[in-house]
Image 1: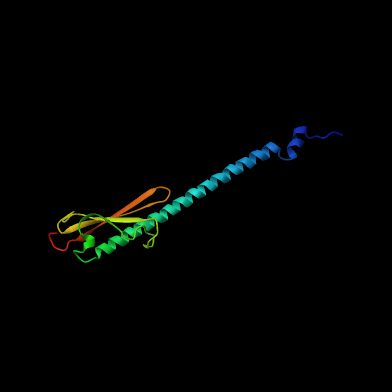
Image 2: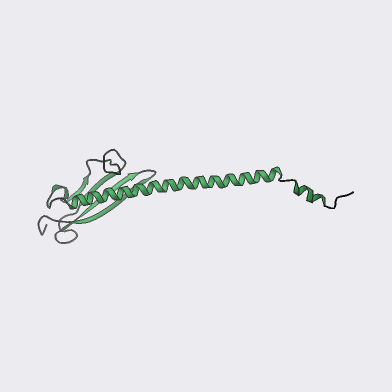
Length: 145
């Protein structure tokens, strides 16, 4: 007696060919490698965001410190560039990190009568160089400055 099924139907029912298995494995390997590369990229971005946040906090800390100094203090006298003596800094403000903090104080009566502008810059290098800058106004000890 002869089977009613065609010969090609029997062949398809037996399973996958070696070529199909290799192709599926290669596709899965490429997909997993793409996920791994994406994970590395996301981790690097997260670290960069942490460093940016720490740099902003260091700049804000210095601005608040300078704004609370007594009027006419040496730390807020007009000067082209002040460099933090604790450089390089860690994220918590202690020495031994990767952050460098500098600040400048504008000339008297800049931007307006009785004020000076303090600009704090924090820079760091991870995979590339970064810099963040914050500015605030402080009063002069005498008006006009």
